[in-house]
Figure: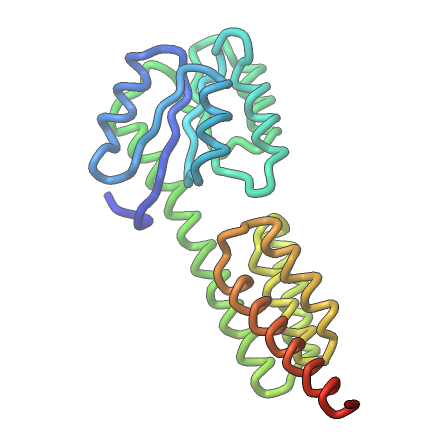
Amino acid sequence: MRILEKSRILVVDDEKNVRTMVKKVFEGEFDVDTASNAEEALDLLKKNKYDLVFLDLDMPVVNGIELLERMKKGENPIPVIMMTTYGSVEEAVKAMKLGAKDIITKPFTQEEVTKVVEEILKEKEDEESNIQDMEKRIKEALTVGDIKRARNMVLELFRLKPSSPIPHFLYSLVNEKEGKLEEAIKHLNASLSLDPSYEPAKRKLGQIQRSSKSSNERKERNQS
């Protein structure tokens, strides 16, 4: 199974045998990290980007629901699969309301856990493909000067991916096309605040800043 290249999974469970089992299933296909409690998980989530998180509902101290609530406050929500035992129905329903993608009941088989991961990562792959297609069409609209169409597509992208750096980056291109460089810079900074490593925004911001500096230098020379 290889749905997304370089996918990374985090398994959070206080039971070592569960962490070990899930890790063995996906090792070789994905990078798999494990955490035995919420504190370890939050530390790993700060350091790394994950495509998927397995999260136990019934952990001591900070349980799965509390950790899920903290994760949902993050800038880039991550798909979560909740793991639960029989008798945790109310908590499972609450987890789904908080945005968990799926729930699997312990003990689960290798086939069960593989199937749910395939489905979620395939959905993620399809979503990313759709975003790439929209990005291409927005740039094409800007190339032919159809700013209104480009702006409308970017606004739709904001609705679909409010926590992604991509809509802000694309809106900066619309602003640049309209000659609104201050607005473009504002959206580029917003893009980088969501993902400081997002290269398209970094390159475009550098390009605009260099162009602005050169323009100011020419004005100063002309005035002297």
